[in-house]
Amino acid sequence: MSQYPVIDSCKIQSSESRPCCMVDSSLSKMSNRYGNVRLFGCNACKPLSAGVAKRLGVKLEESNVGKFANSETTIEVSSSVRGDDVFIIGCGSGEVNDNLMELLVMINACKYASASRVTAVIPNYPYARQDKKDRSRAPISAKLVANMMTVAGADHIITMDLHASQIQGFFDVPVDNLFAEAAMVKHIKENVAEWESAVIVSPDAGGAKRVTSLADRLNVDFALIHKERKKANEVASMVLVGNVESRVAILVDDMADTCGTLCMAVDKLYEAGATKVYGCITHAILSGPAVQRINDSRLTGLIVTNSCPHEDKKAACPKIQTIDIAPILAEAVRRTHNGESISYLFNHVPS
Image (cartoon, rainbow, N blue to C red; front, side):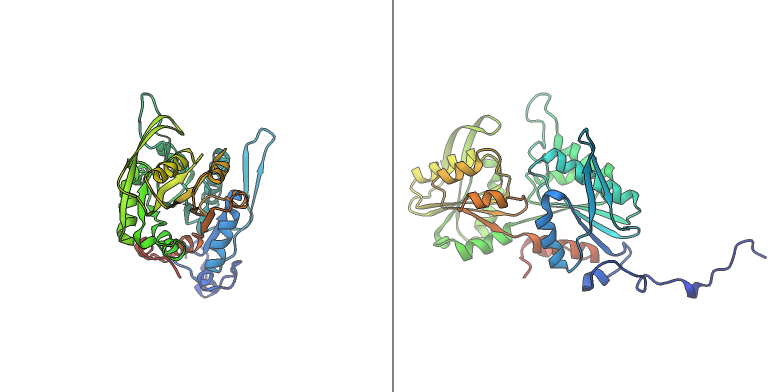
């Protein structure tokens, strides 16, 4: 006779019949090999996280984030995530180091709480500009951040408009790099007058691929500006390659930090004969004097996404127009959870 007790399998609850603390919705009822969806948001990006949760029809899970007297970050996940599919929305702007540490600790907390999979959703990847050794003894900090996320326990990364696409190769786990391009095309067609004859302009040679892709989708011309830097955030000179005379110019870049380069490019385009100049930026970091520079510039409008929180800056700058990326991130989460391809999002905006 076996020394182990016999368990009546009929008494074991199926995953469908177990109580679920998530709200009643089509997604919250879904359970696959990774379990139910649990959505968390770091403190710096609560509005975006709430938008994603509303779009999915799930509850934004609670977590207690605090700091010790010496500023160490401590996190307590309020509900059980054992066997569940966890998505954590983080922020790579603002107080970058604190926000990054909060994301890492939250990933680790969920991993040690026996989550079946942990996906970090970081629209604005931190330290993305430090992706190569461009001078002697320079660090490759983007690779360091990738290592930290992997070691913390991230099984999958969802991000948007990486500064350099090859950052995906820094990870040993799957990375989905989404694009804001489709949403920007839709916004430009709906809100920019005379867009049919506009010129899409890159503020540097490195953004040529991004600009040509957008120009092809709009079926318009493109131009680029060659710039020489004295040092980080300081441009020495600019040369325009292309024709913008008597046309609307749309400056396109992945991020705007202090906006010094952006405002210099605006002046250069007006000198070349542009009638109006718009900025189209994915990640509106807007550090230091950025808002004042935008207000003082001849920029007609600045189109940005909400990948970085900027509600206070938008209130101080009427030129800022915001594209909500919550529907894109929500659809990426849904497709990831269900094991569907997300390539549809590269060319379409969720309705």
